[in-house]
Image 1 (cartoon, rainbow, N blue to C red):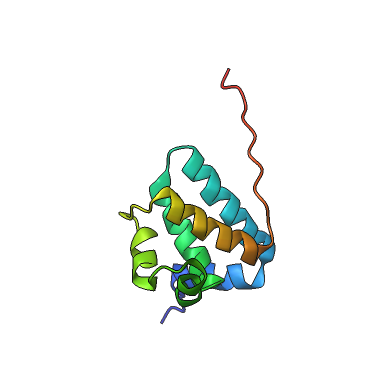
Image 2 (cartoon, rainbow, N blue to C red):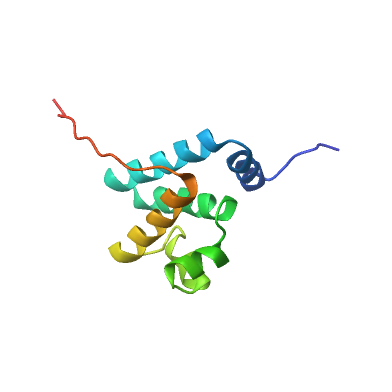
Length: 107
């Protein structure tokens, strides 16, 4: 008998016990969005919401139904820019971080 734990449970536990890991995931999600990989970014944000604020609390903070938030942050989700901004703002607040964007030349 092997002892294994679900990957999502492992990520959730790590986010909860390691604030640096949570911030790194948030940074990765924002970078993925800005670099054209929204599907992966939404899934990372979903994991962060599950491990930090939770969808029910996020629904209260964003004034959006939790089921809608679940759909928005699914692989096939299609959140509006306003909704996405609201979700990111709630996570920024929870993680106590700010976002700075820097562009670099592709040369």
